Amino acid sequence: MKTLMLFRHAESSWNDDSLLDHDRPLNERGQQDASLMGKFIKKQRLVPDLVLSSTAVRAHTTAAAAAETAGFVGEIQLNEQLYLASEETLVESVQTLPNETAVRVLVVAHNPGMEKLVQMLSGRFQIKFPTAALAIFSIGTTTWRALQMTVECQLVHLWRPKDLWHSNYTPRRDP
Picture 1 (cartoon, rainbow, N blue to C red):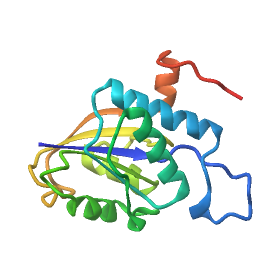
Picture 2: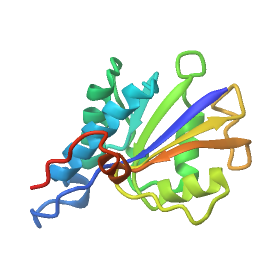
Picture 3: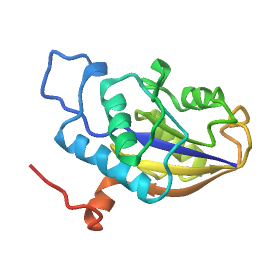
Picture 4: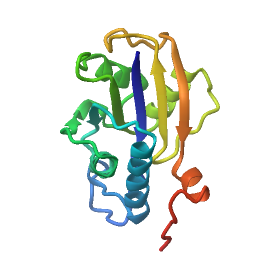
């Protein structure tokens, strides 16, 4: 069995109109949410074997903050194909991952592809996937190559930062 963790990048800043979309950084709330989700990943004992991230600044920064607070010790693999990727491209990127060393994989990317992939794998098309949301899937296959839209998947859990803030998991420091 494989575990696929889909993590949408945290909230980004729109303060600098001169930046390209790819280069937008996280805002303060995004930084807090990325770290919060990393702490939660660690607490749930879900530290990934491999982290795969879009090359966009907001995605890579989200991956780095979450990986650090989760206790992930590997190198984050950047994949430019994940920038604004469709659900099909997201699946194709996961299919190329190594089976032996990557049992639990965290993918950090963007909507609408991430939300559509969560909906398709779960079979629940009403799911919304806001910034810094994390979906955990148990995949009914022993190889990443076998991952298809039709493979048996179980949505184990879906966490949103606001659920954790409201549950008093960690006090939020609103500006």
